Image (tube, rainbow, N blue to C red; front, side, top):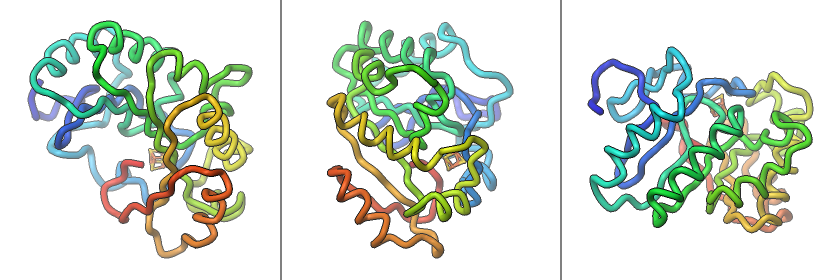
Length: 209
Ligand code: SF4
């Protein structure tokens, strides 16, 4: 893989490998990095079509043995749980072939709303996902909708549901929020504290939950 203009599903930054499995997202955050850039680190993340498992695993077979990566992260220009089955299949493949690689999911937390009737957190855990970083950019439904402009109903509640269930399923959970002027960080932090998981404020620079 090289840093030409071709869109990529597998890329890397610092010591982590990232998987850009979809450009679909159930949010349309006004601050989303993809509104301003075509990628990060010289990689083009604007997919022209969603990758197949064969395409992703072929790239991973080249990339993962190249060095000692600290983790493999589902994080790109879209919401990974939009393709839940593909995500799970890819995670299982990674655990089968590169057992030591810790897997993280960066998500907007809409997994239960996007996959009704599924046990999303348990399925992630069973597939080998170790941790998740959930984006929560609002202290209530109103502010969340203003900042993130979801195209599904109940997005804010779905995000809280995902955080609770991911923790209960035994995933390591972290919640983050982007430092945008409109965000009331103390209020978001209070909600996250109540959920009993760590909270991290991210600077308003290149996306990435
Ligand atoms: S910042 Fe994340 S959740 Fe928001 S629109 Fe972009 S990809 Fe979707």
